[in-house]
Image (cartoon, rainbow, N blue to C red):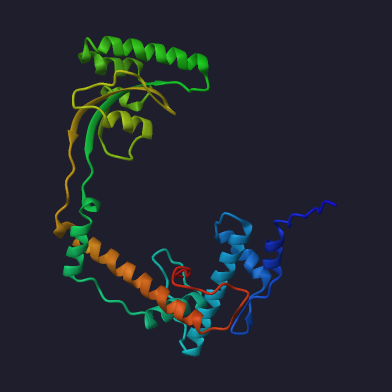
Length: 282
């Protein structure tokens, strides 16, 4: 006799989570509230999104309970755009400001971080380049083939008479830079499409691409005129930025630890135990 095992319905864990009771120190968090919160959490599965939403509301409730226990009176602030905090938002902010104290990063700490991460404080390479764009969409086979033929012809001529680049740009390029002979001015990493950038970075000053470069905009003939190498910025120029980063990092770590301690002493039902890696700062 063959025994047939029925696979578990993959939706069962999610339905179980939806129906589970959730409470923080005896205060219930309704499923309807969790359902509304889910939209603010991106996750690989609906179950994971539900768990994150549940944890988020549980943490919020936990913070508000502690703020009320400490008898903190809400003092809402208004931001630069005129948006005013709700009383709950003010209580959360005020509790964190009162209970979480972090030191300001000193010069020695900043200098140490700078020396260990010098590559992060390097000014970008700058490229002065020009191009000729023959517009064509790759899905339009006929137009793309015609554009490729024209681009190949222009490259063949320019390889012999490079001084015609500006004239060809004005005549054939569909980019607005055609008015200036194809000149793109100064560009750096991230300013152009990945394909254009990859081809540009392989060139040496004065060199032109030997093959048309395809991008979503069409086919490009690219010429590199000048490359200005970036360099590591001096510590004095980035010290304030480093100090702000280190202080913010310390604040987040301290906040996470504080909230984890609150969660560890709370009576939680239907929600995962909150650890420093779980908590989200509001």
